[in-house]
Image 1: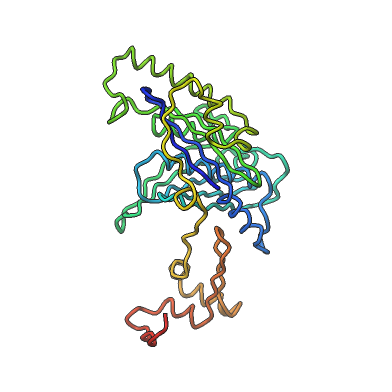
Image 2: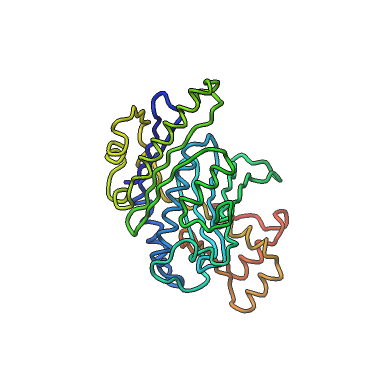
Length: 325
């Protein structure tokens, strides 16, 4: 069962979270593998996408925000776009678009960023966003400040948190065909309720040393350990000498789980965005319009009547017969 565990270090401005995605992650892979047209993700792509899903859950765990956190990696490599989306209730979905063959053992720079122009975007799309209000988005390159390509997704996100949020962060991420997992520890802001604001500079320096010690312990976690061990066992192994305060773990119906927000209404809105002329052209060529959700694999079919109905103004549409939903 997938699980998220948040924790604090007692008396220190350091917080953390650990996530282990099992059924939620294998469902993403199962649906992709069942797509007869696209087929299963190559292992390097699945690894990247699993790390993104785990990272999305970890990052959403520490923000007071109702809505979706969308993590996107885009570039000019075999993976043109990879997306992981996590909602406040910890439902998640993920997908990747490929632009060419994926060699075995390929890393992030060659997978997404061979030309050096790759980007990572993190978007917060509020559930109560007003019409016309744009979501918040932060974008960073897949390279450090000197322009050197970063070798891993964890490094990219650590760079993003330091640069965009001014929060020193340590991330360890891993994924395979069965598990996607991650550990995050973060230096909390020096100001704000509960963050030891107003501490003397000497104390602040000591807290920086505390964070450095904890970050070193976190960074010692190996990929094999992260994939194999349960969250509580990992936390005990890493931080057994620290005073750890753990929140109740979120599992099952309250924990991370796969869900897709696609619907026929959303697909109809997409067709309206294409325009009536474009849709009529597809109808002349194929006889119907079929759209598959890249996240969950569900197929939506619009015959000629359905497709043209999409462009009919609501006040011009015939009434729905009684008993028809």
